[in-house]
Length: 228
Image (cartoon, rainbow, N blue to C red):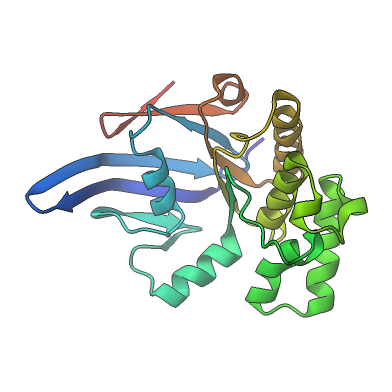
């Protein structure tokens, strides 16, 4: 259930990649809003611009034109330091590959975004332990990524994305490397946290069965959105 509060908005996003005399228009005018608590699946053929769009929505790349507003604040016009602060405060990221730091424990990996924000170590560790408990990994706090299964590592990545209590989470093929059982478990956890924390999820996925569980399905085709 949403609260009709816009947390992320894309306005006429265009992206052109140029190399020499060659220019490729990947995104040709993307407009959409994400409300609090919404779950949105983004699908499309390989090379259609899904990951490019996710990088722009997350402030990791800039559009050729257009703007992205996170909690009402422009990412395009923000300074690099302000953009980083906005991402840390309002946004979480989950990738196909977990990108956990191998030398740190699950607890330390999850606490990292809060430590970067400047939270006290004790507060960061308590928050990390709480969210790891929510994803069913309280018994794995001290384990390093190499000591965890693929499904457990992805649950740690989800906990890391949610430990800051973000407004919105961008998930790029978050179940792409998991078997069916772990895929369903990861989605169950995401849905539960979506409902209890009112966090919005935008997920790029090739799995139609997973996409059909979301509130909305948006297809990128020929540089434009087509909503089902």
